[in-house]
Image (cartoon, rainbow, N blue to C red; front, top):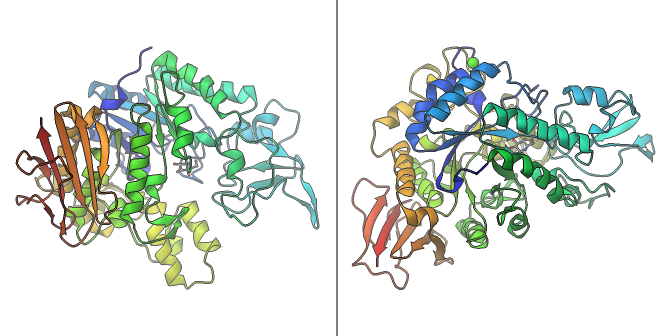
Length: 554
Ligand code: NOJ
Ligand code: CA
C-alpha cells in the first residue's frame, strides 16, 4: 500500500499516564485522550505518537510490556482504544504506536516460560548465557553495564544461567536472532495495523541485534561499555528489512529511536526507496548541555546545539528525512535546559521556531506547547523514574545530598512526566481525583486555559509556527543553510526554494544581540513573517530570546 506523506506532517506525542484523566482515578487514560482530541487537532498537528499503552508492571512506565496485544487497564480497553483511533482518524490525525521489541517485561508470559528451563518453546526467546567461574561461585558472562541498574546480567537459578538486560532487570532483552521472535514481532505489527494504526515509533530499535560473541566491553566506561556490541549490530539491517516488508503492506510509517547513532550510520537506514526506517529519533540535539548522559550536566552551549542541528540537516538533505524534536518523555523540559525560566514566554516561543522551521517533521511532546518546565522535588523518594533514582544512588555519591538533588533536578526524566496543566483549577484540571504524580506548582500560570485566550502565549505561538510551516512550500521542502555558525548567542538559518528565501534568526540570550544579515540579503526586501514579541521588531537587533522570521522573494 502507498505510504502517506509524513514529510508534510507534524506529530504530537502523548505519554498517557500524565496526559488527561477521564475517569477520576488520578491516572491519565484513553477516556481523557478522547476528550482532548479536538484540542490536539486545534494545534495544527497531523498525528499522535502514543508512548506504550500496553499492560505493563511499570518498572519503566510502559517500556516493560507484559502483553503486546492489549491496553493497560489503567488506560482503558481495546474498545476504548478503537474509539480514540476512529475519532482521531475522523479529525485527520494519524495514530502511531510505540513498538518496544528490544525487550519485554520479566512478567511477560514468554519470559515466565523462558526462565523455567532450557527445553520449552520459549527457552530461546531471550539471551541466556552460562555463568563464568568466579571467586564466589560464578560471575556474569561479561562485564557489560545496563543502562538503568548495575550489571546487564541477572542470574536465574532455575536455569543456572544469566539473562541479558540492557535496561532494567525487569526488562530482559529478546533474542532477535531467533526467527520465532521475529515472527512474533511481525504478528504484533499486524495486530495493530489491522486495527487501523498508521505506524510505529520503534523503541531503541538499533539495539535489537547483538554481537553473539558478547565480548567484554572497556572496563572503565560505565553504562555504555557494552554498546559497541549491541548498537547497530551485525544483523540489524536484515531484521529491519523483514519488519519493513510488513510495514510496506500497510503503507505504515516507521520511526526508529537510535540513541548515540551517528548521522553517517543513520544514513544507511534512512535513505532511498528501499530504506528500512522513515525517520530517526537521534540524540545529538539533546546533548548541548551534558556529557554522554544527561546526569552529567554542563552549561548549555549554543554552538554545540547548532552543530548538531546542521550536521543532521546537511547529511540528510535530498537523501533522507529528519525527525525534529526538542522534548519527549526521556528528557527534562527544554525551556529549563536551552531557554530560560525567567524569560519563560520569550525563550519558550523562540525555541519553538528554532526547530519547527528546519527541514523535517516536527514532533511536539505533551505540555511543550504551553511551555511546561522542570519540576524540582525536594527528596529522591518523591521521584519515580528508575533511571533518575538509580543515578542518584550510584553516581557522584561522594557529593552532598543537595548537589546530587540538583543533578536530579537538571536531568530527571520525571520533569517531563508531571501531569499536563490544563487549567488553574484544582490539580491543574488534570484529574478530579488524586493525581498519581506531583503537579508542577507553576500550573496556576502555566496552563492551557490561560494560554488559549492570549494571542501572545506560547500555545498561540506554537499554533502560528505550525500553520506557517504548513502553508509554506519553502519551509516544507526548501533547502537548509546555516549562517554565522561561529556565533555563540545567535542561531541563523535559511530555508530556500526557487523564488523565495526565508531566514530564521534566533537569539539565545538574556541580553539583546545585534546581528548582520548574511551577504545577499538586503534590508529593503525583507518581509516579516513571524516574531515572538508583541511590539514590532527591528532588523539587525534581537531582544532577549527574540526570534524573527523574514522572507525575501526574488
Ligand atoms: C527508550 C524509551 O523512550 C525510554 O523511555 C525507555 O526507558 C527505553 N527506551 C527502554 O525501553
Ligand atoms: Ca484514569
